[in-house]
Image (cartoon, rainbow, N blue to C red; front, side, top):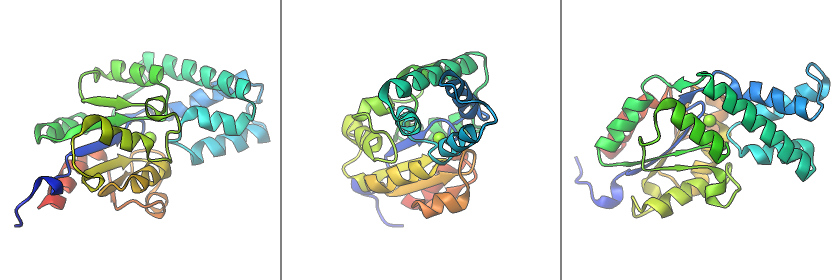
Length: 235
Ligand SMILES: [Mg+2]
């Protein structure tokens, strides 16, 4: 076995929340329904179906960016985003989310191994905080990031991953970053950041083919398998 130097250690792990570490059982789509209603998009209409298909395809992207695309005008996008965040927050407070099985143990193992774990999301900060509070995860990791914390663009840009790199100082180079997520945009953000491992997980929005097409270096059944993958990669 080769001796590890510090620059080989995969010591920064950036994990997506919904669909990766947090199981929300389709709450994004439900909350989108509330946003669409607020903007007068009739349920069951072709317009609704088309917009929902876009929401599915861009899962993981900054939600305000999604609404800007769908509604064009900034004030409508803000209205839709507010309705979305309110509806999602109510569902979260109603106990509709849970950790992905094994996610907490995986995070604790990675942290116990001396790695820095960061949780990132496409949601706004208020929603991210509501999810963390509902799960009792507020003190679980060193840093949590939403798009606004990293210049506002969110995924598929690498900005949140690079913000994690800059803010934590956990590793010497971007090749020591591990990114894991359930969507095409998570994979793109990981590839664009230069992360050494970009792992797709099958507990969320997108399938193996979509994840691989967008640059997944590995596809895992769930985030519970990630600590072993990292350990193998360092061996
Ligand atoms: Mg996700």
